[in-house]
Image (cartoon, rainbow, N blue to C red; front, side):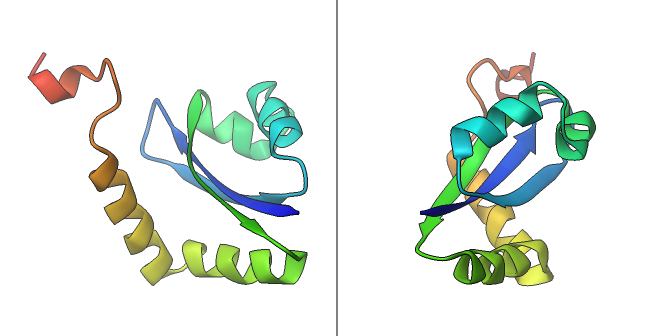
Length: 93
């Protein structure tokens, strides 16, 4: 099983879209800053993930999410999720 995943920085507005065959391992690599994405994002949360039968299908979806319509879809997804727990901007503080 191949997993497409989207990470969102907790300290900025950056997102990262990636593909892996082991999501737990890959998230740990990002958290240890062993990847360029981890270094760019800093602290992050898993915003979204999807499973695919094969790598080619996952890569097609990845390319979509990195394009204009895909970024707009992710923007809508992020807005529908609401503010993170403890987000001071949600209560004006």
